[in-house]
Length: 374
Image 1 (tube, rainbow, N blue to C red):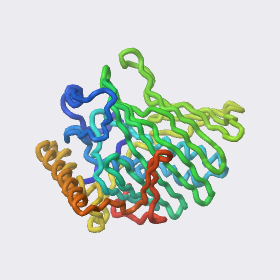
Image 2 (cartoon, rainbow, N blue to C red):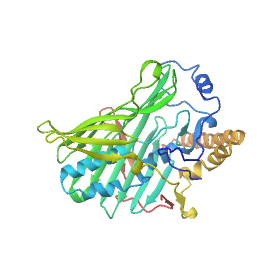
Image 3 (tube, one colour):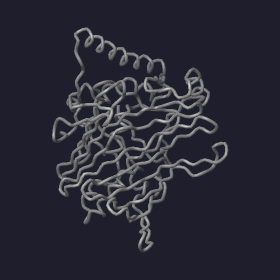
């Protein structure tokens, strides 16, 4: 079962949003036995709090679900600075709206999500379950572009809020230009009291290794007294040359609206990102070749649960979720009894305290997928 990606909602949108009944009361009951500062990595949500899709799908959608081909624009920039500005805009486009009170499924070990959009082929694999680590590899042979990600969310409970630090590195390579861009992700922030809400916060650093250009973006969620009012979904930042520390552009705006840059020399202002042109009117991917779908594909693994959630058959949803979880426990017991270690199929994975998780794709290119993004 494939559902629409997370995107900017319009007043005219009629598609139902997934919200748990008596949301605030249920949230408070969930956390009543959780101590402030606790790690929520192993925390399990009942189906009423789940979106009908896996976290792998959400990660993938931020790459393959766009109304504008920003990656192609990155590649067509005439100068290193032009391309860098486009990469900054693409990085902002991976910031997607969050639905408060509902969350995607925690991926199972070895789960995959494989989707194509045009010439861009995207593959994700859950390479670790505890801690949860996701690896992504995407390639576009026509544009000669490669993307690699490794992501590890670390959620913690702070009494009236939950913040999920997103550890890991994102890398975008424009191979025709010999340029590699490295960046990180903002953190997820969920406020339970006094006014429920969700936003992206923290600092994102984007760096081109070859040119020395750097962008610092600060994601902010400002609120006034009692959580009312204030500015939401704010981005402020700058683009500068790391060799001279000279600021070239100042950045200001909102990731769900527009982000503008101001030239420090002549004061000219230009829009570099417009969310309404990139993350609206997005459609659900389609299944082109069902026979070619891997058994580990998110859509296959969670099909029963997703259908039950959409139908609001909560008893069936609980049963479907238990089936998936029990199957994973059986597989783990089998590996333990044989003394076997699970090995990812698509990535070589290593971990060190200094670097964190490193996920290197086994293959140079991602193959075309049986699921197609529109």
